[in-house]
Length: 459
Image (cartoon, rainbow, N blue to C red):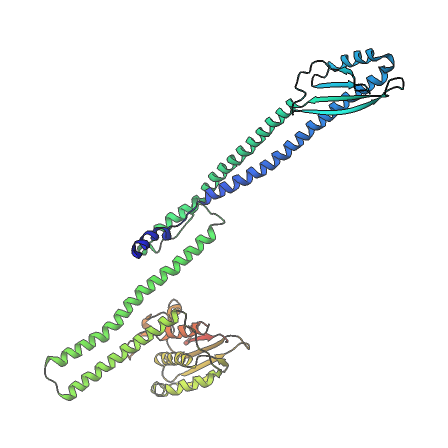
């Protein structure tokens, strides 16, 4: 039952909601445009409506003024004259309807049959009073005017519909225009995606390029191409590393197999077997050292950091390492001196190992009888410390100098000695120890002097 539930729930869990940037932007801009146009149209409609109201007020004021003037000026001539005057002027205003009542409520004057429904909700009704001569009973006339607004309101409704249609059409039009523009603007990104899909392990040298420079995309393209360059170099280095590891392992393994087969080919004396086992042990120790060095480099590549302790004198550490190499230095007729000192919190075993590799490397390639120097330089308190080993001997070619810290890298004039080939991880370990101390490897060669070392950042 649980298996069935898991199977049914898997598609929902794995479902990925995707959206289109062009469609989302188009809808957002369309909605925003519609809202903006709608607000603008609402303001325009409000202004138009206020103009109609002002027109109605003016019409009412004019009609009321005319009625008041007629009553005041003709009332002393009699009601018949008032009715005649009102009838004459009322014919000019077909959208109004006026009723005049005496003070006792009786009707003095009424317009003819109106052309509109005076009880409709599309009319405006206003009342006014007219002061009359004292000879008139009651002393005043009450007037009621009805103004027909139906046509104006129908016009306002039509204007409202037209403005709403304009806002909708404007929003949709702008949305479609933005959709096409964004699609066209995203075309270089789609082209870059197609170029990216074409890159695989067989085409790591391929780089992204834009048909025409795009200011916003060019930095991303440059960064991606730089990343591909680093990836290509790492891939090539990995392939070379695998080939070098196979080569380094093949030689001692072949020797072990050969010695063992030879020992088993016929009966051997105890001394002969001991000699074979001793030779095999040397090869196994070389294999063990190679594997340990490779494991150390792998840990450094994974970001292992140095374990710093209390500040130590680097000159003291250098003297301890020199004592360890004393026999080899005497055989090579080399004299070593230490120049400078600095107290730095470091991982003591790692720094000793790096110094040992540097001194061993310098011992192998220094000319006999020449001085060997361990230089310790700290430009200022708290600044990174430079620790270098200087020897006199064959110069390293400028094109090979940046690569001497690569794993298994060899240069014939530098890496091959009378003692035989080394596996080529010593300086790579020096560079790894420098990185673990937030430093970097250092190398220079010229005028018969070669300096190889590393820097150590303060803790």
